[in-house]
Length: 219
Ligand code: UDP
Image 1 (tube, rainbow, N blue to C red):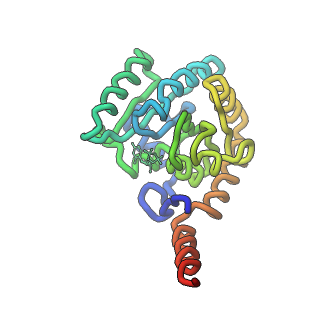
Image 2: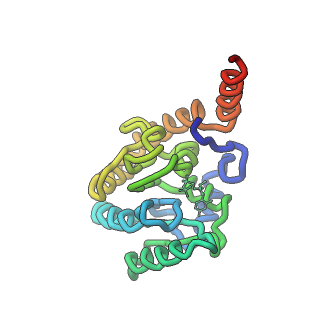
Image 3: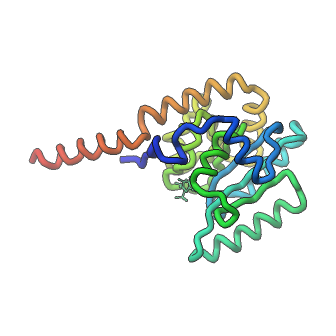
């Protein structure tokens, strides 16, 4: 039984685009310029350094593109702080890279705003569990460029709801393609939203558990 998202939670209930843009602008993003986002803990398997490298390749084609790396920090996860530092060093002095976390006021609702306001959502994991952030982004009608690992291929149907990628170059190519073909991106985003509607909302969780209990009850 795969995990699901609650479509009525503050993070996943519809957020008007204009409002989402205002919220991300409050963190320094220029909403009139394209924005790539990855929402993830600062963890080597989420590959934020690879996302920065992919963004740098995209920037050669679209010079005004911005990147937001948004992650929550657990106070009992010293590796997270270490990896956050490493990510910041990798970003260097690039003012178009925004590295944000919950201690700066990015909570669940703001995560929903970033997913809504982004032009491209990336989940460039090299290892993954299910990848709820992918579900959340697809639900907001964003095609996801994701690593071909864990639960991501259950959600990202290659070429239909986003793209599965295996390298930095591949990731950059697909992000660039989607940014340059907004109509196609919208179509894929709609397909992704339908995919989540049919498989990964909390109602399906309930239904799947009821099926399980029924199958266990009939012995
Ligand atoms: N999340 C969040 N704030 C952040 C980063 C992540 O609320 O700054 C949430 C994200 O929206 C998702 C969850 O944390 O619901 C992460 O789940 P996922 O399965 O993607 O990854 P995990 O961290 O469990 O490996």
